[in-house]
Image (cartoon, rainbow, N blue to C red; front, side, top):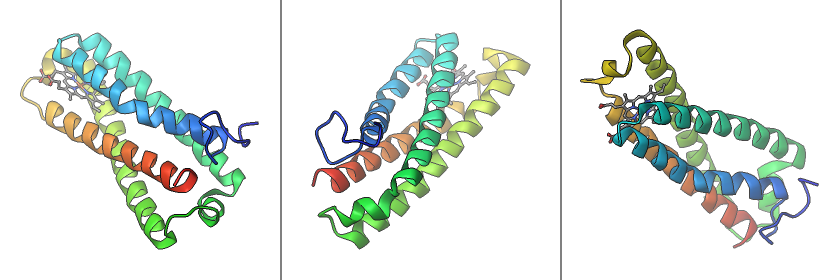
Length: 157
Ligand code: HEM
């Protein structure tokens, strides 16, 4: 079922449609979470970060399993019209940025949680939290955009 063509009406299987839509929407979810912090609603900022991070990790594992079962990139690139070397290089860069972004996200979440437990929300004054948080938001948004482009190149172009 999830390996059958999905609801977007492209050549992609259903699971690719679900994952692509999730990651396309994720920057908006992150923006909402940051807007909670801007409004000093730190409880909601924390809760929304926890939910977004957990969802991203679960969906990434689901994605990895489905891609392995369905033959993955090599199989899809055979039927795609895009230049193979170009999309392979693009994919490697995408994976590199995505690992850094999610690794940084996990690090910032865990270190922020520990700081909150030890010092409360006051403990975030005079830290780099805002700077690192914005960098991670940017890296995650670039990863998402690159992922959407890979979907387009493999299944629509
Ligand atoms: C346990 C998790 C977290 C807690 C308790 C927490 C708490 C806070 C607090 C207290 C602030 C205000 C800091 C200040 O006054 O300068 C803040 C701001 C911010 N946080 Fe977090 N945070 C968490 C996780 C994250 C994560 C994982 C990200 C990014 C991926 C993030 C992104 C941001 C950003 C961008 C701001 C700045 C908002 C603004 O422009 O004012 N936070 N956070």
